[in-house]
Length: 480
Image (cartoon, rainbow, N blue to C red):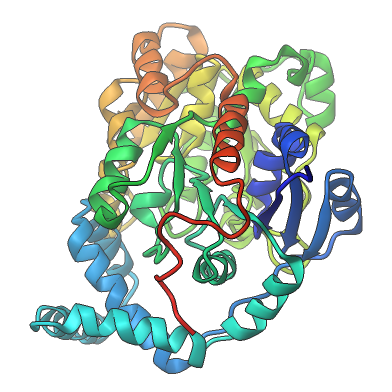
């Protein structure tokens, strides 16, 4: 009996780490025939993927004005229904960089949308219009022709909130093709846009994610949800991913005898004022408030523009800059994460004595290695424009379990930041039990075997839907 053809859309670099570098794709190839849709061209990467199955182009989604308008209304409806505390936090943060008149216009626009949505029967009408316009005002028909040619038996999706993947999965769902989603990261359900697909099977990191899924998508309440942990962290339990100290320092051009502070830069929209923290640490070392032998390793976020950091880096005296991996030629997130890139990250997490970042996933990475985590939550620039927003980063729904665990030292001033970093360097900092709680709350498992759990759930999912084209609920969701 032939293996089922499993369609896997891939639209960003983190999916490469999740699928290819963890070995998940190799495991999938044992019970399915992977049919991968890649969003960017990379001959080396395509050759690697081709070892396990077919590789085709992921069609870019195109939305017309009417369809985009309806989606805006439905996104507002979803945010109201979801009622996540992250939504008003992001809205307040976004308003900080808008002019007063722009804020007023946006506020009026949102009020109008909420008023319209509350009209009797309006949500049903919007959903009906969205299903109709999907086929009339997007390129869904073009994507449908591709799907017909590929003849998939099922779909496996990691980032269904991204438009290109969503459109492909949506078209498959309209044809009754079984769908499975393994949500890539712990923040994707509360910080990303509405997902208009009811998957037949879900996988998530932890029980918080399961509760968020049930609350935000009640129409999926009858669908199975498996808590599998975080495959992208499995590397950290494998000692072959940690370089010897001297080799690591040579690779990153670090001095051989200076203790290293890791500063993990975030994405600019999270904390636009973040470079001030890097500057404050560099100045503190220069003044001797942090031991003068220390050096800062600045690790740039994979998709954050470097321009906002350049003023600090140009005048820095104790900072070494490191890009996480080769960046995409056209889009920063379109690149190939290789084993050596993961080894560099794991080695950095292991060898750096203390880690600093603003409400980042790196807090989880660092907690796995039991290194002190320091989270700046303030703004000391003139006017303190981002002071409230800086603290609210840690109050977002996905990050709240981390903040409450005690595994991250959240500091409210530069004096506290300097004191906690110095404590981390001298070994006097606490927080080990908090870091253990953090891992239990967010990752669920600490055994490095989450990849295998994903493969097991996916294999059973395909076995339970072995008849081509049979799905438990999506066939009637979209009609052409």
